[in-house]
Image (cartoon, helix red, strand yellow):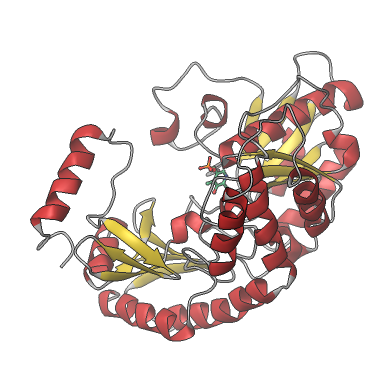
Amino acid sequence: MAGSDHTPAAELLQGQAAAHGAHNYHPLPVVIAEAEGAWVTDVDGRRYLDLLAAYSAVNFGHRHPRLVAAARRQLERVTLVSRAFEHDQFGPFCAELAELAGMQMVLPMNTGAEAVETAIKTARKWGYEVKGVPAGQAEIVAFGGNFHGRTTTIISFSTDEDSRASFGPYTPGFRVVPYGDLDALAAAVGDRVVGVLVEPIQGEAGVRVPPQGFLAGVREICSARGALMIADEIQSGLGRTGTTFACEHEDVVPDMYLLGKALGGGIVPVSAVVSSREILSVFRPGQHGSTFGGNPLACAIGREVIAMLKTGEFQERSAKLGAHLHGRLAGLPESAVREVRGRGLWAGLEFATLPGRRACELLAERGVLTKDTHGSTIRLAPPLTIAEEDLDWALDRVAEIAR
Ligand SMILES: *Cc1c(COP(=O)(O)O)cnc(C)c1O
């Protein structure tokens, strides 16, 4: 199947992509033409179940009718005015997102990396103006194995050589401590530390769940030392783990949520920093911005995403189907599996010997799409809307290769 008996049309498209698209990705040999819900169809008419959901950007499935309708309505009205003017979607989007998060203020951007950059700038400015850190001395602590995006500043504190090497000189002002290690964090958070940037679950690192009590410990250290707890929930948030935010699993409220991916409903890139009025008030006109951030189309789609999350049904579905997913993964042959991690409808499955890339190829041949990360781990993150029988069908395929 995939990769072996492609039609000339598919071969041509793959060849064109390889010849003219930079090779910064290594896609599986599947050329998608259409999608609906949890299913995608390739140019040859083959159907695959999507167990990656664009790294959780497609939490509500492909082309969810509510989201497509919201986008269509807005396309007929106004799509972009820049932030030089107000528009009628901006205020409601910010108010509704702040309410969903239990916060007060929102700074919308487009990609996740921009939300992270915004948080870094916010924390530094807050550090100088509110905490009183000497000019140019602010530090931010991040964790080993982190993934926060691809800008030159963000890769400066990456611990992944592929992401970081060859891209220096690096932005100073960051310290990195081992993920899950509260003693190391406590030792690193000195007077000049303005923020601690943490993924509640590390997605790209292979769906790594920290030890119980870690997030609460981060919160405690941040509060005690006067540093901002910045929760990067770009992948873990908005229903993926069975709750709106993954921080909820430890009853932790950070100082800033970073959101992205699913906030755009799988239609447009929408990201945001959500925080208190005090913290986000460090920005005055002209000090930060984005031509596309907070545009009418993005806000209209984001508002529909928020309305869908407000019902709680997607979080509930994620928790219920997640329990089923983890139950079935626990039943895979012990000899084939090194470890299964995750929470909600999100799993990192590490095979004993089968390389991750090979596992993904075998699954694609069987009609299941997923993506490897760091060697032998594959991640399973289907749309939260997936039908239980479809999930079971995909897990039967996983069981076939797990031997
Ligand atoms: C994907 C991701 C980002 C970066 O988002 P982009 O939209 O790709 O820039 C940042 N943090 C986390 C945790 C992510 O998963």
